[in-house]
Image (cartoon, one colour):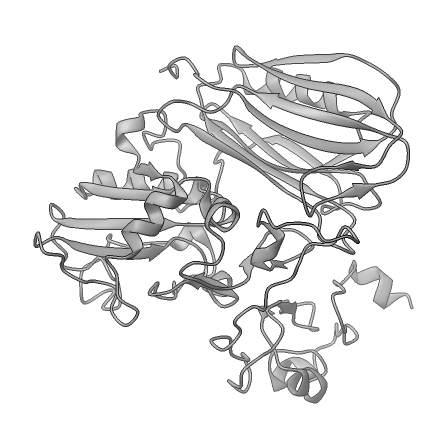
Amino acid sequence: MRASPVSAILSVSLTLPLLPLASTNTRFSGDPIRFRQYVSHNRSLSRPGGLVFEKPGRRWTFCCKCRHRQGNGYAKSEALNEGEDFIVLNFYRFVSIEDPAAEIAKHLSFLKDLNIRGRIYLNEQGINAQISPAINGHAFPKLKLQNKPSLVQYEGGISHLPLLDPPMRAKPLEPSEWKRKLKDLTADDETSPSSSGRSCILLDVRNGYEWDVGHFRGARRPEVDCFRNTSFGLADEKEAPSDPLINVDKEKTDILMYCTGGIRCDVYSTVLRQRGFKNLYTLKGGVSHYLEEEGTADWVGNLFVFDSRLSLPPAAYGNNAVDEAGRTPQTPVDTSFARCYICDSQVQELRHRNCANLDCNRLFLCCAECVIDLKGCCCSNCITAPRLRPVLHGLKRYEKWHVYRDS
């Protein structure tokens, strides 16, 4: 099945270090992806409050005809905050690709001289990517471009799911529409009947550790640490008594699903559709798009991201004004909900750390006192582990084991 014609062009501007001049055109499943470039010796902004690049450089404008009228995909750029050295572009699209291997070869040929790193996955169902151009650093250690059986990891794979059939996916809501839908929810109860007798359930289709640093008010914490194990609406009450979709009216219940960028919700909505759920809605562009368009309305905390930054404050996405020094005003972030994994006290820093025990490597929130007391480990058992790494302070991430083994 081939996707129907596209209807709009999405443009994202990236500023890269000066590279040899070249005009570049490539094609992706019949739709052109063009990187337009021009040299600029003046300071350039990727967007208000974003990257300031003083050195001679070239601005690249990424133009991709990937915004399908029925929502087959989404793309998003995240601008730099003060003190950061990179930006990240996230995008995905469900589209029939006849020869993924050939597309990968074209992409590798195109990207080889651009000093871009990240993860780009393609298969017969489409593309899912996170990439970072070089400024003074990278969000990713290397470029990984491969034909992957599943664009996202899910138990049993997703190749059998009707992802290329838009009616089988949830209806995407613009951030403003999503905000209005949230008014049907109360702060204390996920399900609140409306005057029409309908119910509304807010579903966080992420991992528990993502919820721990930020979430929409009223969303229950997911009891999974990997999307592949997500099972909302798939089990009976005895097997999963805490499942918010147990015993709901599939005809009269609105299911509002959200995730970071949108792809996990799109995928899981087809699973629920096959289970008979009629009224499925997703947040178009995910939480990152919502924070840019609507700010922190109904959102608490930071947003977990799957790169070296781990966590971003809402201000990183907002279209805030820039002050005279070129800085984005910072808004205080509510951390009252966040708890230390070890002692359950409130934490002030909404950023995970990995357990110092390499063979555990658990991702967890931790207060400053427990970091010291347990030497950066998640529990007392890990303190005596044979492959123990040093305690990391600040925003540092652990390096490869040989760095510590050979030191």
